[in-house]
Structures are given as C-alpha cells and as structure tokens.
Length: 365
Figure (tube, rainbow, N blue to C red):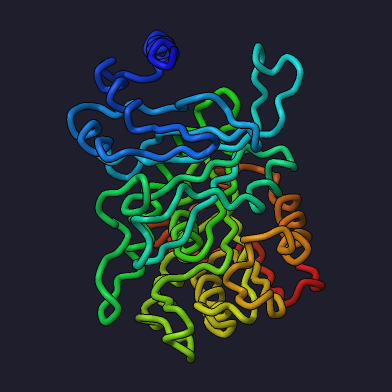
C-alpha cells in the first residue's frame, strides 16, 4: 500500500510537469523519508540520491493531525543538497481541496549549535508556528545545509572565531532560505509575494542577510535574538561575540541595500547577544539606510535567547508582531526605489528610510 501511494504521488507530480526528474530519483527520495508516528526523519542515502540525478521536490506523506504537519523536500542554495522541511497549514476549509485558498507564507529559520547541529531534529518551533497558523498563515520551517536530516557541509560557516566572515556566512544561509521560499511560493495554496521571513539566532541573522537582497516573494523580515558568533554564557560570562566589530560592519553592509521592513526582537537577558549589541546592530543597519524596528524586552525566563520557544512568549512579543504585520500589508517592496550603491548618487528622502527604535513591550513603534 505504501509503495502504491508513493508511485501514484510521483506519477501525479510528473504528469503535472511540476517535477522534471526520473521516477528512479523519486523512488530514492522516498527512501529518505521515514514516517514514525508524527515524526519524519531523513535517512542517509538522500545525499547520494540527489547527487545521482535531479532532486525530487515536494510533499511526501499525508498531513499529520498537528497543524496539518507535513514533510517536504525543497531546493536550497546547492542543487545537490535538497533541504528537508516541515510545513504547517491552517485548518482546511470546506471546498478548499477543489479550490485551494492562497494564504500568506511564514518561513521560520532555526539557529545553529556547532555541538549538536548534525543531531538536531527537524525544526518545529511549535508555539511560534502555531501563533502564525492561528492567524491564517502557512508556515514552512526549512532545515538548512549542514544541519540534522538535511546534512552536508555547513555552507554558512565561513571563517572561524578568530577570523569570522559574518557577511558571507549570512548570505550563504540566505541562499537556502530564498530557494525554499521561492519554491513554496509557487504552490497553489500559497500567496506569492507575501512571505514573512522569521529567524531565530543565526537564523535571524540569515533572515537579515536575505532582506538585503529584497527578494520578490518576501514582504518583511522578523529577527528574533539574531546574530552570529555568540557563545554559551556558561563559558562566556561577558557575552562577547566572535568578531563583534565585523558583525556590526556586516549589519551596516546589509542595511545599505535592504528595502524590506524588519522587526528586531530581543530580551535583556539573552545569553548570547547583549542588549547593547542588539542596539548596535540595529543602529548600524539604520545607518546604512535600512528599516529596523527594535524591541528589547525585559528579562524573559532564565534565558531571553529562548524568546520564541514557548506559549508565554506570545504575551511578550505578540502585540509588537501584530502591529508590524498590520503595518506592512501595503504595496510590494519591489516597487520601492533602488537604494543600492549602484543606484543614482542621490540621497534618499529621510522618511523613506526612517525606522522606529522601540524599547520595551509597552512602547509604541
């Protein structure tokens, strides 16, 4: 029965001309998805399958009962390394199967731990995902190269603590996010050009790097406790960051070309990124011309770096995110004037690049 289901699924996709890959590749890709209850894990032969031929992308297996959870294979920054992803969707409405409803997309991007990156499970961020699903968003959580089931080389780690390249590292991670976002934006249940990209920790930094490119399918970016080069506070009580000056310089460089509105959410007791560093990064972004709305909330639990991890976080950042989303439903950002260095040597109007700097949960942007 399982083989018949997968064969029919692959045939349908080929018949629709949505995947131009041999059926043999499809069969191998299916071996990469192992269903165990509601948990989906990718097996080792996947990288060999993608190397042998063109990867087969799309959904695999039925939706689960938790927020219509489903396993997907998606393109990333390297065609030879497809990304594993979790997709959540709002409850199905009557008639939706016959006439899919296009909903805005939220792309949630995980952080990185050098010690555990290959052992981590598929990203879920259940409470953060649920917040968006309950508001009508499709949520996709891609697992980037060098992590967990996706595996492969950690493309986003360029340099080392003594000599980091935060700028190029962020862009390498953004390659994965952009490719996955563009692919899912073509699905009949996703509204193209309406994606909100959300990132936590190094995923927040990667999301900011993506904002510097102003991709056509992305409307806004939300950075939660974002940065690079942070180390656990237990071994780093001063919360110093590898290459802190370079990190701030990279934020400024991203801000030079970023048109997208960005929301920055931090807590004062973040164990990786200090409040003064968060302010420094946002200031550098704005000095480059970017739009950054910063909130530094009071201490959150035992570690503010976990701001997005549980239900209690809704009461801290929920209102700020609601206002930010409501304020950014206007014209597509692709219609904004070009502010890249290659554009005409004319200073932009101050109001066109102004950004609120907000501190505390009760402050208005």
